[in-house]
Structure formats: C-alpha cells, structure tokens
Image 1 (cartoon, rainbow, N blue to C red):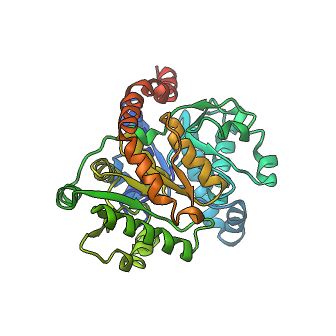
Image 2: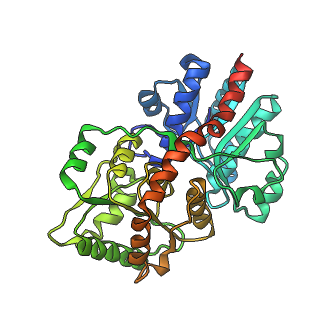
Image 3: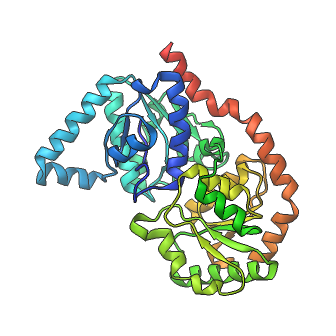
Length: 379
C-alpha cells in the first residue's frame, strides 16, 4: 500500500491522513495487519499512528531521483533494493491518500508513476482509489498516457473532470474520507463545547492566493462572523513545524479582534477529531478540499474558495459527490460575495443534512468496490 502520509508528526496532512486512515482500517479487515506494508515518507511515525509496518518512499521528481543515483549512489541502491523487495513480497499495490495525480504536484505524480511502473514490470495488481486526475502538462500526458489503462482499478472522486484526463476506464466513488468516523479528542471536545456557536475556517497559500487576497478573505470571514455573533475555529490541515496554514492565520489574527473568539487548533489534531469539530460547527468556509468533505459528509453548510482550475475542479467535485449545487467562489471574488453565499448555504441546511445521510448509505457500496476486488484476490 502506498500513501502520501507522515503519521502523527510535524508533517501531518489532515486530508491525506483521513483517506489513508479509512483505507488502512478496511484493508486490515480484508488482508490482516500482518499482510499490509505502507510505503510512506515517515515510516516510524506512520507505524506508531496506524499500527502497520512501513518503509520509506519519497515524493522525488524524476530529476531528483536521477540526481540521487549520481550524487548518493548507495542511498539510491538501498532504496531501490528495498522497493523491489517489498513489491516482490506483496501481491497488490494499493495507492490512496492523498488523491492528487496532477502536474501541479510533479514530485507526487512522478514518484507514484515510477512506483506503478515498477509494480507493473513485476506483474503485480495495481489499484488506485479516491483520486483527482489532472490537469497534466503536455510532457506528463505523453509520458504517462499508457500507464493508467494498465491498472486493475482507477478510482476517481469527481464525476465530470478526471475522466477527461485519461484514456483509462475510471470508476467513480465519493472520497474515502467521507467515511471517516468523527471522534472527538479531549481537546476538540473542549473546544466544541466552549466555543458554540462557532463556524470552522480553513485557509492555505497556493496558486493565485497571494497575501493580499488571503488578507481580504480573513477580513471578510471576521466581519461576517462578528455580524452573525459566532466564534471562529480555524482548522489547519498542514502546518509543518508551526508553518503552513497555522502561520497564515497567526499572521492575520488581528482581523478577528472583537468580543468573539478566534480559536486556532494548534498543534494539529488527528483527522477524526477535526471532523468531529467540523460536524458541530454552524457552517464552514474553506480553501481546503478535505475540510469541505468533512463538512459535506456531516451535513454542515459549506462554502469553498478556489484559486485555479485544479482547485476549482477538486472543490466542485466535492459538492457533486453529494449531489449538491457547488457553493464556490474564486479567491478574487470574495469581497462582497462571500456573505450572500454563506446565507444561501445556511438557508439550505436541510439539503446538506439530507445529502450527508443519503451518501452515508447509498455511496458505501461503490466506495467499497475496489476493496472487495482486493478481497476477491485474497480469497
């Protein structure tokens, strides 16, 4: 099994880990813990977090991988030998968490494709689940067009974008993180009970989201929350060593100076407690895809903020998974348009609630299909 995860460590990424947590739990039941090995960036932390063996595999671009061979040949030989051993030892390569095969993240794309190529050369079965495919650069499209059609399963999490990016037959199912059970930690339970009413807010710096636009977004959220008399709970999704999302909100905390509280979940909690915290909020505003999935899968009204074609496709796909009209704004459209869209989302709360209930039952069968396929091979 391969996942872009770090376990409970400074590199913890909420969305990737949420998907992986669901996949690991399902595969443990099917294959047994002793028959799963995770390829990941932080083996020690991952094993401690998820209770399965793991080994190191990094998101190197092809250029970085070639440089390793030249400048650190022993490290290259060791990593190659470990990978070959693990692939030969196992029957299936199961790729999940995170879900982005795109040129926007060349290290992720190229390292996964090298892994897939290595598995196919050994005639291993390859399953890819809960992905967003593309956009691809012309070079990546030429280089990898032949690979995905060779896989045993190509699972995507959007209905109208990913299938246009490949000649492979893709299988749609809602994001695996939708099935992560919300479970409070002592800390998130205290935040939830002490801050109500509150909304949850997530923000990231990516694409066209420059400092000025992030300032405007923060100001708008602060103003709207003051007008509505609700507290703000900021949920970071990636804050390595206190940077990332947490640094962004700390730099803008002065916009939230009122009688209402701004609570920043720092350090980051595990995904399940953060989903529980989201589920008890009045609404969500998020630039983070999985914060939107957390809200949608627990029936919470949500507005998404996108920054480019790639993030627009991802966030639109999240709403489409639940059969809802996307409530989205571009980052440069926030001023004056965010509050009316939040009002509309709140007015449709019953629709959000019904969509979450319906997906929890109706979508589970499709979500489990690639796992059932692995189960059929195991038996």
